[in-house]
Length: 400
Image (cartoon, rainbow, N blue to C red; front, side, top):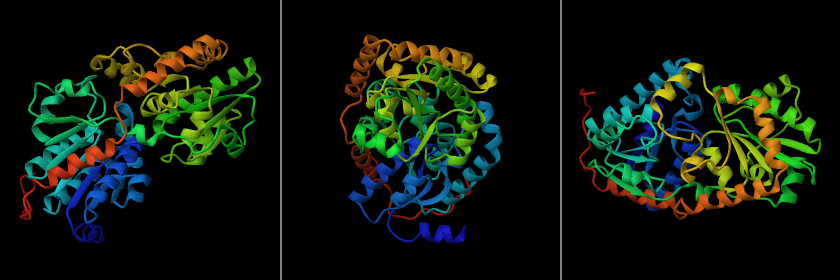
């Protein structure tokens, strides 16, 4: 801990950044790199993964150790999460932080914003909590504790119109991130896949708890579909938050033939004729690659019951929410079973007009996400807050 603090206090303005999952780590890293181009003397520390580590921040805790989905799933990691929160509070109280950047992850980040605000540290929120879908009352908390927010969907600015919060639409960061490195032929050769066969991508999520619930149904779906379409192959791009052995063990348990590929999610999705995708950021990434898909969502029964009581949207998949209609089929909770999912995949794959219509709808998603350059615009907004901070170093506070 002592060495950690010495690194943080080395020189330049100090910025804490907090992310809680793979997508936040990706977008947070792009933001950090953009801010360092503005001011190379900045010093970053906080919670992140491989991307933020590679961008040069001092990792206080790894985001992969913090990532959970569902209410009951939080309980297994609650002790560790609270421990990390206390560490961040202590670092804020030390008076060496000039700016806090929070990336999504609202249940952890919003209380941290409150602490920072009380200590007089500026707070920049990048990627708004989904207050438009559930717990809308959080809008007032955000207005109270956040100095500036950058949102990534154009409809989000109107959500905050009635509160005194500086909210700017910067475009979606995936417009800069999503892209293929290989041609189809090169990718198939690289991954050891056959040319001429139907390729189905399997994207079970980036959290272990999520994968445990979703991947078995996806693998069983693959086995059913293989019997109905013999010339089909399955490929799973491994999220960098997951261990290869963890995922391969689940696949072996179900005796399925699935190729696991490391570090190539966009190329895998790009060559897939269709994909099974866990609800979340991956659905939007798949849409930007114009790959037809089905969306799968499954949490504990209690988490689902509580979610139904507080979530107020017609669709759960971000692609469908942005489109304002059901563009891709959703399989939620009990419906997320192998029989139903295999039927849907088979019907789409054997109906070329439906495939074409789905691809056409997916191309429209990109047009609704603004222009590339989100990280650069967000970096300018965040750096502007550093200019507003006092040059006097804050004293250690006992207020929090």
